[in-house]
Length: 298
Image (cartoon, rainbow, N blue to C red; front, side):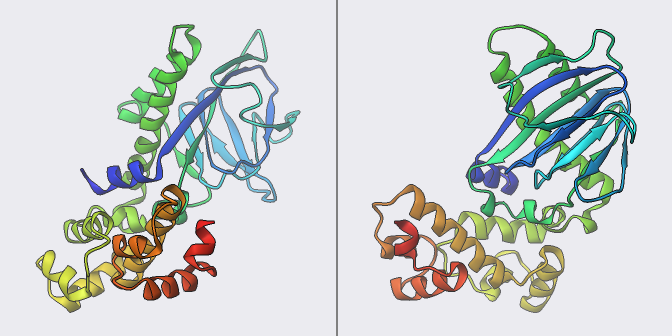
């Protein structure tokens, strides 16, 4: 299993497509903030995006995908002065609603969310920009997924909701992959590091074996690299030192164990995240989160 698959399994991606809206000119939609990532696909028509509190307008063209990792309050407008339907929530019509706002639609908009059960364990989310814009590309795999989603959203077939959720899961991964292609590996932080075979392997070892007594030297040896060259390369690619990253991942893994396995003793949690002493683990945990693991657990 590759590292990104392992992390997506851990954070438990849950995707939802809430509505397919057919809009007639002039149109404008105001979306309230969400506690998860929000995506829109302007399947037909043209418009613009504006984030609440920011006067800048970002043009949107047919086939474009927009991802707001932080779920910020925002507007999608046909034109800057279009009349607006205010205070919309993506879940207010339930899953997979087909909204026909006009008998003569000039735009079709798909709206949904990407939610994570454990977002703190997904380093990529912290490194994404406020808005990801993926332009239409006829030959891309992403476009084929969008075409399937648009067709399924309009159909009235059994199990439509399940099909759309699975397609939306694929859409998230395709958006991220396409973003890396557009931005370039060196501009994509943690995700770009996955394209460096040495650092990818080091990250895989950290994520899949947090209980191992890793040091910079042992990680460097495991990926066949000198200690100094590895430490410099890891910091440049990931944005922090290997031991800092390791400690943070161990603490995040510990929070998952404490929440989901409350019967575990603190010493057992400590052992599973690489600490031989419950006291040392408790000290590191409190330094990271401001509370003792026992308090966090209850």
